[in-house]
Length: 201
Image 1 (cartoon, rainbow, N blue to C red):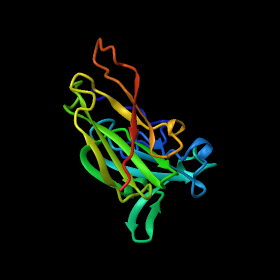
Image 2 (image 1 turned 90 degrees about the vertical axis):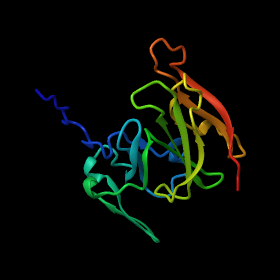
Image 3 (image 1 turned 135 degrees about the vertical axis):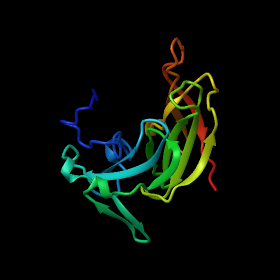
């Protein structure tokens, strides 16, 4: 007998926008540029391939019918659709996009997109760190950091995040937070941090 996951109460059934994370514009959306809040999602928890961008008026977040997604991209910016099925990904990177994080760094007016991938599917054999930057939440995205097996093969780190409250006044120095290995018996199943400094070009 085939077991089917219930969809009652799910805002966005299916995998296209199954794990959205809000784009972080600072405390209380301090650096928002319009009246929307934005969110990004990949098509798979780990080793997904497509990143979608959604938006919704900030007073309608819990109303699924108020959400929109990028339908096309042009020189004047994106066109939006209320039909998730006709939306397009804003970034495609085959099997290199896992639960993403996007933050806006107001000091340099750039977006950072952080993601990761498992080195071996469904295993605790290490993971890679992937960071893009962009002038807009819909891209274009430029790969600025790729770190194979960050933390080593015995430490499968995942869900990298940049807490904006930990950024220093220079706007380019902060702390990268990530979850540690979920391997059975691992002492590293915990939040970990490491300091970083962006190189401006």
